[in-house]
Image (tube, rainbow, N blue to C red):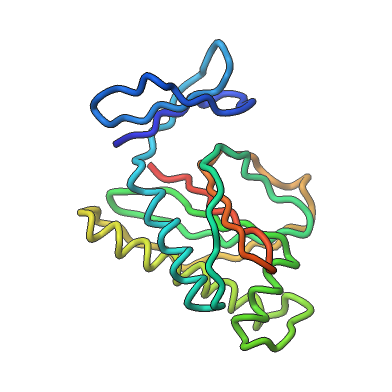
Amino acid sequence: MYLSIFNDLFLGIKYNNNQPKDGTIVAKAGLPRAKGRIYVKAEVINPFLESAKLVIEQVIQISPSAGSLGIKDVVHIDNHIWIQVGMTGQLSGNVVFGLQEDVALRIVSLMMGGFVITEMDEMGTSAISELGNMISGNASTILSNQGFTVDITPPKVIKSQSSADSVSSKALFIPLTINGVGELDIQVMIS
């Protein structure tokens, strides 16, 4: 199953109610023209969502709820942290877990058994990196069980200082809301 997305200025997603009978999901911007298309296998998104929900529930004992699938500009903005994991093999690209720094601190505090972490130091960065690694590793196992040969790269934690240095790209994303903690976005840029 493929998700076809027109790669232009995205002012919102309109889903075609007359979906083809072959299982292809078509989503497009509400604009009259498009410069190109991004094809992402729908099977790629669900393993990351399934894995994130499972890992977060196991690690911090809170079951997150998923929001709606969307398209997002991936830009580095102040007070945010991104955990970037690359994928190689039959699927290549990046998965980025984006969250506000205060949400990351709450998650790390819960990972540390409730010990309150007030700044994202080396220990906090290592813990949040490991969360991204666990989610991605589990998702790559799910993808492997679906017949995809994939490898993941070590996670890279990016702490944003200024949006002036960021490069924008488009990604499919699904927000996860963790009650009492905040929101984590799963941003998928894999083909």
